Each structure stands twice: as C-alpha cells, then as structure tokens.
Image (tube, rainbow, N blue to C red; front, side, top):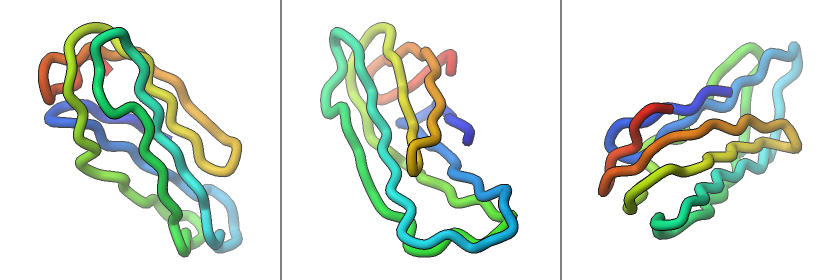
Length: 91
C-alpha cells in the first residue's frame, strides 16, 4: 500500500497473494484541524493476484498538518502530510 500527494491524494492497494480477491472494501481517512471532507470509501470488485489497483484523484482542501489513514480489508497504512489548498505535500 502506498500513498501519494500532489494535487489531491492518490493511493495504491496491492494484492501480493496468489489468489484473486473480490469485493475489497477500502477507506481513506484524512484528519487535521483545517481540512474539509475527511472520509472516502469504495469497493474494488476484483483484485487479481500479484496486482495493484490505483485509487486516484481524491479531492481534498484545507491547510495545515494532516494524518492520512488508508485501509483495505483490515490492512492499513498511516502517514503524515501537509495540505495547502488542494495540494498534499510531504507525504
């Protein structure tokens, strides 16, 4: 699992196993004192073995430090970043 900044936020969900996964629930949570719209959720219908799915262009807006949590089926990653308007920096 990787998290990227820039204009908005992007993340990758990876299947390192040998079996295809179905109906993979994912969630991206962003928390910070001056950030709007903080939770995004979705379902990956099919995630083949040894593959990666991109979650692109999650729109954010705010200012200041943030904590970003990305989870997929109970597996997660947490990173710190800094938001300036629609840009996510220092991820």
